[in-house]
Image 1 (cartoon, rainbow, N blue to C red):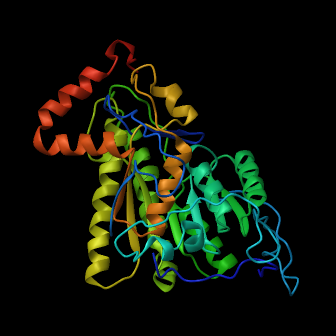
Image 2: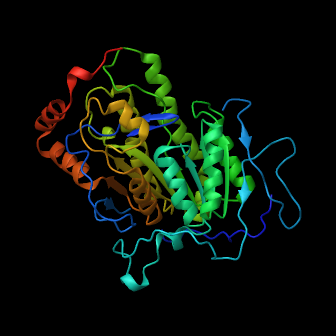
Image 3: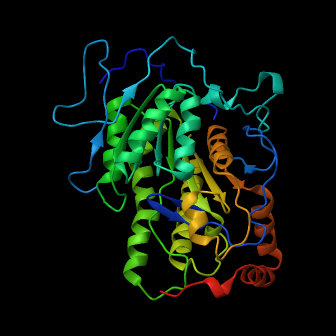
Length: 378
């Protein structure tokens, strides 16, 4: 299909948790609720960064006709409505990230996150609620082209509508479950057919898992690994040719549970350790082969998504960090091609430091911070 009135595409050169369809516990420490009181900008002082469906899956929405009156393939509904208007005229407040990273010579000449991402083609998974939803809204304000995916079609429709209101250059969705081997390729193919390329892949979805003692359910571990790990690999693999062409970015939303194994998250933690291992190794291979595609790992603590709070607040008494700022920091790190981002930086960074110098003390502190009497066995 072609677009009318959309922003031109350009190449990347610069560069828990629970949501409605997913469960991600990403904090196991009494410090996890610490929240710095900085304003919601990309230059937030509290985030640590380091460089470097089955057949019948529903696609929905509305396409505007392009200059030649072309639409999507006959017989399919694709979730798309393109916002038209003069280039650069949007009205939404745009978060900025000035002076981040050594490569920036001076604050006055530093490009903003919005400038880096304006007109970029971005896939966001797990986008119907929680952090994924907030990332979609931030990217919309930055005038990016969005392809969103999650399980719940009705919620995705509402998110797409709001993204267009906020100024997205275009927004569309595909609904389906990532435990389907076919959905990752379908999502990436949709991006290629619609945009002819891809600039950023944000992997954020997660499968359902309980915050409780491991009960020996091996099948659950297998299924969770398919959703939380294998589908990430499949999406990145399918998107890699387009990302190589655009010199784009892969952003992997992970958790402190992928570096520090606390109790009650054994299956979930295993999937996050797998993500860390795979994408860290893949980054090394990209460097060896001189592939200019960045990989950013996002190590998150306890974030105030509604489902996460309701799932773990009876066990973890800490104050969660804001999902809106968390989402913005993830986008910032991806745009600036950072190696990783820690959020919230102080508690997550403290935990990682303590793990390296006194792991048994850290384990004891984690256990001592939980209200163990409230953990239910299944």
